[in-house]
Length: 180
Image 1 (cartoon, one colour):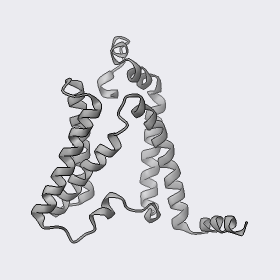
Image 2: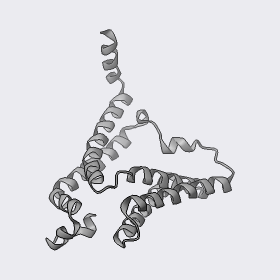
Image 3: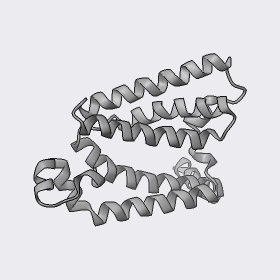
Image 4: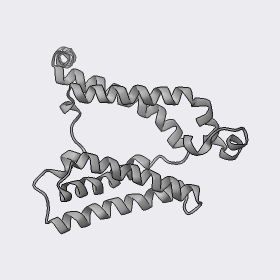
């Protein structure tokens, strides 16, 4: 029984409080976003974007610029590429995600090979640790989480309509392209 109370003692530590709050915020947001991703058959988008981000991190380290920013830029470009392939009928969502995953990951491996490796631990950028969240990170996660929840709340019916029948949503006057 005393082991259970030992777990609660962790709440005395600031780093654990930040990790717990940040984890709860991300879990709530991801659960709601995940609903739409599963229904749209885009469940693998997180994996695809993570592998694409690997290429962005490698590019940033290779160029000597902030790897987080290059990772963000490459990830946004990957999402736009997936959307473009899907919209133009070049590939279904899962196939488009697989294409971007392969491109991003292979580009990262090629860049690492050309650079002869890096002095930083590449996996720390990819996986990190929730226990290293600081107050600034928590504020950013909170702001992004609130913004995401507000957008999902405001456009819930429209997003649901687009998810189940894109053509019908378009006929109802819902701006499908910006909301997709």
